[in-house]
Length: 73
Image (cartoon, rainbow, N blue to C red; front, side, top):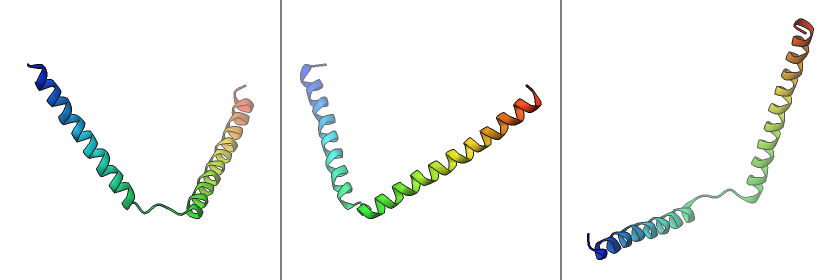
């Protein structure tokens, strides 16, 4: 393989990468981004659900630990 072929091959991949990045940027402009208010609301919703699930699992853990201590230990 001649050195020139490797260079052209690398340029082809570089051109494809640049085209991909340009199309990604154009597509990102067409995305319907949420408003600041929606983002805050959904973030608080996720945090609230996460805390509720954590509390539920913590409660179950507490119950099972107490049952095991009374029955086994």
